[in-house]
Amino acid sequence: MYPEIEPYDHGLLDVGDGHRVYWEICGNPDGKPALVVHGGPGSGAGAWWRRFFEPAKYKVVLVDQRGCGRSTPDAAEPEADLSANTTAHLIADFELLRRQLGIGRWLILGASWGATLGLAYAEQHPEAISEIVLFSVTNTTRREVEWITRAMGRIFPEEWARFRDGVPAEERDGNLALAYSRLLHDPDPGVRERAARNWCDWEDTHVRTDPNWQPDPRYDDPALRLRLARLVTHYWGHAAWLEEDVLQRDAGKLAGIPGVLIHSRLDISSPPDTAWRMAQAWPNAELHLVEREGHGAGGARTRELVLDALDRFALRS
Image 1 (tube, helix red, strand yellow):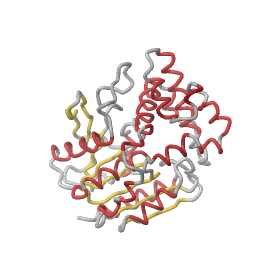
Image 2 (cartoon, one colour):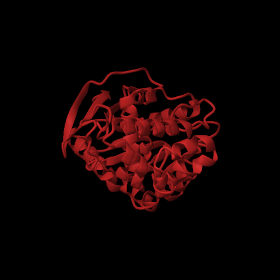
Image 3 (cartoon, rainbow, N blue to C red):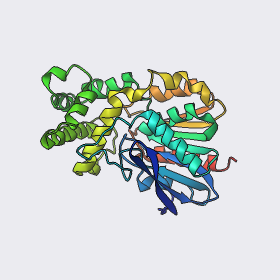
Image 4 (cartoon, rainbow, N blue to C red):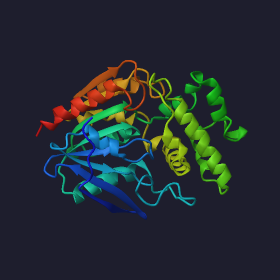
């Protein structure tokens, strides 16, 4: 990873609907533009994302998506309204920021939920995208949500039973993400806190197939637990407001855009077949399946492949 760097510019973009989106820029003001699309939804664009880019060659734009991180209002606030927080809203925010910053085209770096959002954005605005680098690739389909909220219980049956039993008995056979979303907006703060803890415990469980797994210290923060759980359940419960398999069906819109997809074999909660199918449908995609690593950028080989792709693309005009 490259050394830590600090932003040279930042601000809050008024995107309407009462939302202001935090953005920052670091690296070389005259470098190749790149957009970081963070995961979650709700985790925010942490400083570690900056270290994937060679500072002398890239102009890196990081954005905290609506409701999370330094954007306002905070989805963790008791009366938070998520009605104007959808995939379409986030895509519009990226385009508004790109135009405000005077950027013609930019590279996308995204992971996990950020892979879904990055692909959805690129397929709607291919003229704005120069290259795409994605790891821990997801499409947030109903099939994937069902897998991660139910089928992963076959891998962690005791933990999943506790997760399922965190919602009322009459809702346990339905959409678990939406059931949790309702609890996370309950007027009773105790109900909200129990639901957030149960959800984040499951989040920290289903990624444990990584041999290097350690408990995520972020979940010790009650505000982050509520923010992340509210946004994840909101998006997963609606399958990101995307038609089923639309990202794969529309991958032809990415023709001519070079892409690198990196996915780990032990990322069982987000199975590798999603990345493989995207690579089959996207004419210019290069797929890397990494052995013995799990979800996220915790593995050395995953980080190495991301850095290699970004270093190569830095040389493209």
